[in-house]
Structures are given as structure tokens and as C-alpha cells.
Amino acid sequence: MDLTVVVDGGGSGCRLAAFDANGIRCTVAHDGPASLTLGVEQAWQHINSGIASLRTQLGMPADWLPANLCMGLSGSLQKNRANKFLALIPESIDAILVTDGHAQLIGASNGEPAACLAIGTGSVLHWLDESGVSGMAGGWGFPMGDEGSGAWLGAQLINAYLWHRDTFAASNNTPKVFQYLEQRIGTSVSDIQVWSTKSNSTELASLAPMIIDSAGQGDALANSLIDQGVVLLQNLVCIAPASLPVYLIGGLANIYQPRFDLPFQDRFRSPHGDALSGLFAISQNPGSGL
Image 1 (cartoon, rainbow, N blue to C red):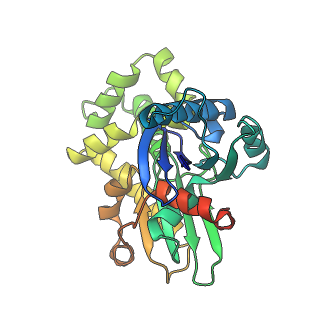
Image 2 (image 1 turned 30 degrees about the vertical axis):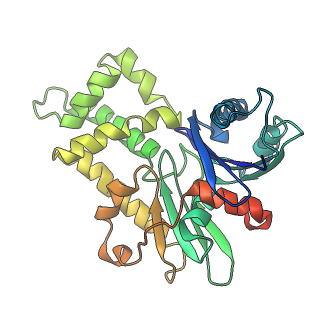
């Protein structure tokens, strides 16, 4: 079978899909984090495991590998890291590597001029203007940058909790989100320092759901953290040309979108496709990648 396998990989996991020559998505698989910032060996291990899942679903022989592999991975713009990762891939595979944000842009906009703000474990803005010139902002790689992301929210929660603990320990007015946090990380100094010194984006992003749940229950602190994220994300969108429509995607997109100011709401559009469809388009026209 003439199949192209594509991989959308970030800090919380990766998705893989096999496309036939006509662009039909045949099957999809999921595996662990494939952000290169978390380690190139780990990224390839999870991608290789995902390929094995596709192989089983497709009924391929045990030694089958795709001839063409197009990957959009977080952290791939750092050249030394990208080269080390590509060296792990078997030579029989024709591999294309782009950043995940660009793949998301191409998928969401169908390759048309637009800006795409992806908000998940990390956050990044990519755009393609009317002249065909592309650009990006954000996405520098947690703990620097990635404002508004799941990892950023988790870090802000821990920081707020430490301040609360140091200054309001005797207070009976403990935010609900802190009660959930203590159930998760513990209350001893030893337990808390495991998290106060943590910089792993995947683990910090795992705290974001409790912020979202608490915000939905009316917790003022949780809502303030999300509102702070909105301000930073709006600042990020303002870097792209103001004439472009905006696609808001990623695991936190639906949480943030209703909180954006009206001028941004007027620019939002529904995505045409996802990063997987964008990667297939890039595989057919490699020059469109970054």
C-alpha cells in the first residue's frame, strides 16, 4: 500500500495517521509525548510505538515501516536537537520534520492566509500572510514563554499556592482550587518542593484540568488565572497581521475562546482541518514546511 504516515507530537502526547495516495485518512493511533524538548529518544520511542499501532490496525507485516513519514513536532526548530532526532529514524524512511504549530496552521486554514493560535501543553502563534510570508511568535519552550498554556497555568497555580501558604496559612478562606491541589500534590514541605522545582511541561500541564474545573465552580482564583492567560494570548495574537482570520486550536482553545475580547471574536473562524491533514498537505508539497 502506498501510505504516508503523519505525526502530530507535543508535550502531552502524539497522534499518528496513515493516509493513502488520495489523501484518505485510513487509520489513527495515539501514543505518549513526542515533543523534542522532552528528549529526542523518548519522542522517537513513542512515534515508533505509534507506528506499530498503525501497523497492527492496517494488518501489515511485523517489519513494515512507512516509506514516507511527515512529522510536526514541538521543539523541532532547534537544529541540533532536530538533527539528533532525525538520525534515529531508519534510513528506509523518507522523513520530513516541521514544527507542530506550522502543521496546525496549514491544517486549520487549508493553506490559506490566516493566523493560528495553538494552546495546549504549550502555546504558539503561526501565520501565513497574503503575500505567502509566514511568521511565528511564542512557543519558545517552557519554562520560558508558552504563556497561557497548560504548563503555564500549572506553574502559575503552584506559584500562587506557595504565596498563599507562606502568607495566609491560618486563613479559613482557602480557594477551592488549592484544596484540589493539596489532594494532588500533598501538604508537607517535602511533597510541595517536588512541584515547586518542577519544570517538566507535561506534568505541570496535568494541573490545568483542576484549574478549569474550579473555574467552572466559580472559584475566583482559578478564574483569575485563566483571565491572565487570556490577556497574554491576546497580546500574542496581536503580533500577527490584523487583516488575517484567526483559528484557535488545541486542548485549551474552547476554555479560552469565550473569554477573548469582541474584536478577536470577530476574527475567529472554524478550522477546516487539523494538524494531521496539514501534515499530509505538507508531505505532498515539502516546500510548504518550515
